[in-house]
Length: 376
Image (cartoon, rainbow, N blue to C red; front, side):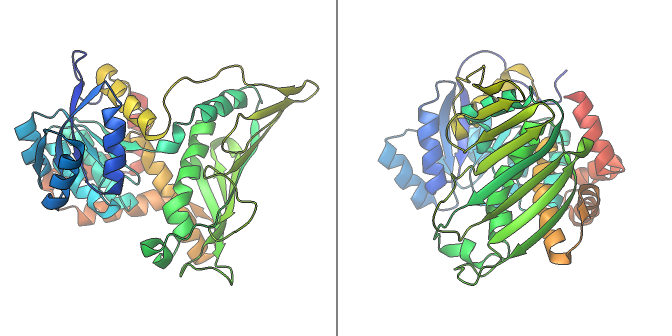
C-alpha cells in the first residue's frame, strides 16, 4: 500500500503553479509541453505579476494569493511550488493540509529542521511531497549509473566543479555560496549513483583573493558513505578558464574498472583487461525539470515512492549542512548528528500541534527514516 494518496484515471492532472517569477515562467513552458498535466491556477503574492503572466500567455485560469483558495476554485489535484526557498515550508504545508500533493523546487526547505517538519506534515496529511532535484534527470546520468553497476565494489567517486558566474544579488552576499546554492546538486547525484547515504564529511572552504563573492566560493568536501566508499567534491565558483559543465566532471573508481563523465556527453567506461566500452542502455526519458514532473505524475498514478520524496531528499540537504558545519569547525561531522540536532530544533520550533505530535512520536530521525524506507 502506498504511503500517500494516489490519483485514479488517466485524465491530465489539474495543477496549480505557485510562483510567477522567472522560474515560474520556465515551469509554465514545461507544463504546456506536458500532456499529462493541465494548468488550472497560478498563485503569487504579487497579483499584478500573476495577471501579467497569465495575459502574456493567453491563459484562462484562476489567479490568487492563497494556495488553498485557488486550489478550491480551480478544482486542482496537485501543486507545483517554485517560490523562493524561504517560502517553501509555508507553501508546502498549506498545500499538503489542503489535501494536495506537492512537487517543490529545490531546496525543499532552507534547513534540515524545516524539512523534518515537512516530513511530519507529509505523513500526517497522507499527501506526497517531492523535490524537483532536476539534475538527477539527465539521460546520460542514467547511463553512468548503469555503467557503475559493472564496476564491482566502488572505492572512490569524485566531482570537479569549476565555474566563474557573475550572478550579482543574494549569491554574492552568502556566507557559503558554493556549498549552499550549488553543491547540493552534486551531493544529491552522488547518492543517486551509489544508492546509498553518507555517514560523515570532512570539508574545508576558502575564498580566493580575486573572488567577487563575500563568502567562501571554493570548497573541498570528502564524504564517507555506507560501506566505506569515499565521495570527494572539489570546486570553485570563481574559477575562470577551462570551466567544467554545470554538472561538473565525474570519475568513479571500482574494483573492476573506472567510469568518467564530463557532465554533458556520454560517459566513458574502461574495465580492467577489456578496454573502453560504451554504455549498454540509453534513457529516452525527459530531462531536468520535465523529467522531475514526469516522475511526480507517475508516482501519483502508481503509488511508487519517487527518489525525490522528502524522506529521502532530506539526506541531500543534510549533506550541505554537515559540510558547512565541518568547514566552520574544522572537524569531521557525522550526518546522524546533524539530523538529530535538526530534529530537536524542529520539535522546539514547530507551531502546529498536530505536526509537533508526529515529530515527537518518532523518537529519532534515524528510526523514522529507516521505517519510511522499508515502507517505500
